[in-house]
Image 1: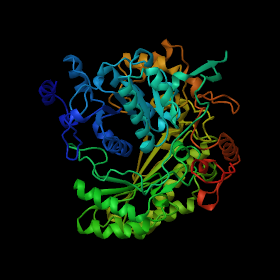
Image 2 (image 1 turned 180 degrees about the horizontal axis):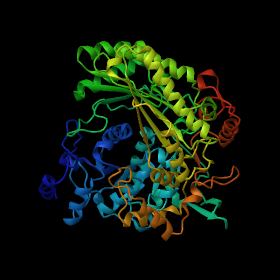
Image 3 (image 1 turned 60 degrees about the vertical axis):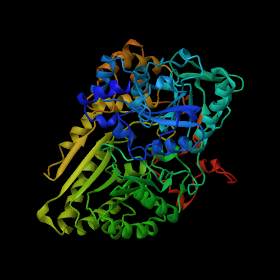
Length: 611
């Protein structure tokens, strides 16, 4: 097989995607391995190798005795074509062995539009798609990641889901499999035992029944299966595993740098943000641990850039302390230190000037909405004064590029709110004209608008999505009010976001749609070069599934939701309260100003909770 791969490589783009052999790759003696895990990322090498979660769990599993975790990525179209022509099954990078021969096949899924890649990777591997067609213990397929907080569209294909953070649960799962393999268990016995591990959801143990109008009538758990599955979290971030000896990619990847996580969760509570609610509660690393991990990562990898990342990095209380330590270290070695996920209400020009000592970049902010009313609706906790004050500071400090991100189609949005984006952008331009220190370079304001997608486990999980035609009308309305040559405007095509909404709030009836679409060529849907909505349109029609049911219909507050058995720690009572406050344009203060009673603190041991 390796010889065949080598013959194919010269004919494809970026052959380093498929070879393995990178610096710090983990190799093991096959004779010492009892359990082989194919860790699959359902996108290309350069996307998957940028994923922090994959790096963490790759290290966690490979630290286990007798376990060898190997990486697998979705091939680009040219390689897939060559694989099919030569009958070459999908392989793992470390051993170059077909993954159909592995004990366990794990997926991490962070984006709904990767669902087709999950199925296509199984097809390329020669593994039956549906769980019921894989009767043995070998080739158990499981999945984790933020998308699995609504696992139902993939319920027919995945044997079980690992919900939440996997540093601890993955060890428990793989250890149980090691025991099952040694003792000769069958698949059914293993699934029954693995379902007893907290955070594990086995979809075949649950029956979904529907009303005549298509809504979900009831979810029936088989005897012994938990009615509610609560996600797992890591409580102590200082002692949690962190991959300081990271694999150095052999080809350029999307985030080609060391990436250091400073904390998990988010204090903000933006009502559209799935990650902000499903990743609660907030847990932080200490500055001392961060500094040590940063130095270890840089010295083990040779990277010339490091990023401090989290959902809202500038909210990290120890940011000044850790950057004060890291900046001299990085400056001396010409290493760029960056802090993304900035918020306009806590922007520090002094910090940014220090960070940009090695390389000056543009600034990015996400006001999300153009008017204060709508920012209050979504609980952005950000005022126009804060946005303009931040831009003023940046322009006075020498910045001439700013990116501003917004959404269109948010609940209660009107044309006045849409035009409020144009008004805000022009105020930013005026701030530059009044404060820029280098006007000869000119100003560039990049404005991007996304099509709002309602996501599970958020206060907006019940909302209607506006139609694609209405979204495009709002895009054109906004564009018609951008007159300055300094503005560069991009907006997302609606078909992709519409399909994302279908998958985000979908149920088990989408399994047939997924399979039909993949059989007809759907894959790499997150890439413009490959996304073909007509394939999905035809699949939906053939399977008798109405996309409007999951998008423009909206959901009733008393409606049973496909993801209701999944507990991310935030109560439905709290989400309903936040939805009501949204329609009243009431802001809920962030967690530092007082606990709003979302319930997530109950996930921590010995913490009282009144949610």
